[in-house]
Length: 263
Image (cartoon, rainbow, N blue to C red; front, side, top):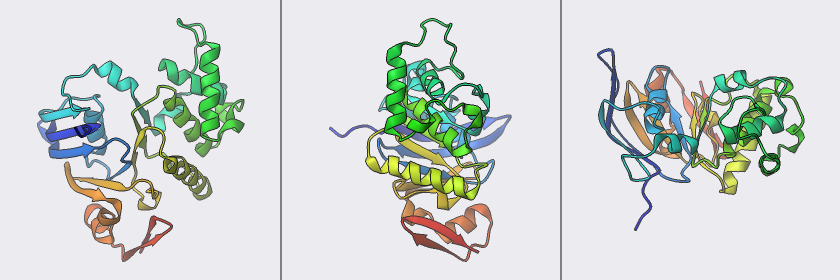
């Protein structure tokens, strides 16, 4: 029997203050199928993911997770790592990379050792393994406050992995990075995704060049609807970008599995 989708939205809508934020959304997120989400500001991208991950309830349609409509949302959320720009700002700057990673096992932002249950030596050993698996050993003792933007994102991914998530949502992870930091981070991310082990990744971005080769599927949210859903090579085109963002891209050039807009 085929494995059910990780998440499935069936005719999902969401209304707020009498306005449709999303309408008629059908979407399947399969396990291990890394996906990019494109769309302009206000299109409904965050709402789509909040509904998918159980942080909001649809006003129409239904959401299935692992084939079931009724699940323990607290348990579900422990299986989802959501890394957004505001998370890094909440981490105490004096916490080391290792302490930041350990905090992920307890759902803390900032490691509070006095809480019960207190972190164990096994937790710290597991955190070291996560940093090593992501080739971030050098960040073990480095204070979070002096890390580069890219280093912080790497540590936060290791932190999310401490909960052994099924799904990892990267919500505009490159926002604020300079070009060099961004390219190093994306190269690191692609290397990790290409290995094939780890959670399913959903990348939210405005920039098509940030969609690395292992993110083989792309969906587009525009005007509260899911307008495109398919292989990245078919969805990410100049025509789609111009339609969705109201721009005048002449063409997209593809190199090493990534797309670059030519204006």
